[in-house]
Length: 353
Ligand SMILES: [Zn+2]
Image (cartoon, rainbow, N blue to C red; front, side, top):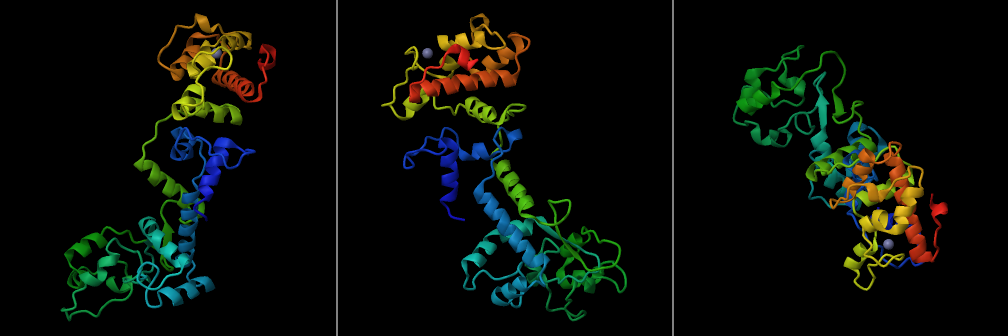
């Protein structure tokens, strides 16, 4: 996926389809904030970088989960003839595809485990225990009591699923034994099973991999929580921009581009959110004419911003006011403002309400 694609999506989101495609839109909020889930105060838009990575993780998963497929066999023959995907060397000449698979391998390693049933898994190249990468270093080649084991069941007592403590200690040391004793052994017959831990189905899908990546990323950037619910989609998007202070009001644009005037198109006062939605006489007329008949002047004056103002309307305004109605009225005010400013169309009070 081209590195330009996320830029195209971002531009479309902020600007829609524009006649002047070369004009760069202003982004009032970071794309990270927009891509957070709705519960985290974002809009739940998927990040293309992570979608792409999730698909790669799924591809790598299929190479190991379905290792008998023709594709898996070709890849193995080409890049890790005598190893596994888990232990494939990184120094061999790489195609773009293989370089990408290696770049996400650590994600797969982190979330994959093997359920030990029959113990037919190789000790040396499968992700069956946390020390997989160290097994060769831990192996005591000086000892002569035991043959070098191959499969995990070689470390079990014959016909049982019990670790042979003295064998493991002699071959790999006491610490290894301590770790192995923590690994659950599954009763029953049948080959060992490769499991993707994050999904209840234990199968890795692109979607599940995406969720894991998004959760990990979110854990590094803790969210601020303002969920917007029960409102029409287009009004929701508007409400999100409004509450996140991401609307292109004249005063905000003016701070970035001083040549753009910061005055309200109707009355000439500075156009910030407070003025546009509550103080401008046009806004006050709309609130009063609306179905909730709100007299903005009667509300206690608040210098503490939009969130408080909206909360005040809900608590102290007309009893029929709901969050949905409030945002819908504000959305109409914003559309009327844009029509006046950019299209020179002056909405009448009736047409807004
Ligand atoms: Zn005004």
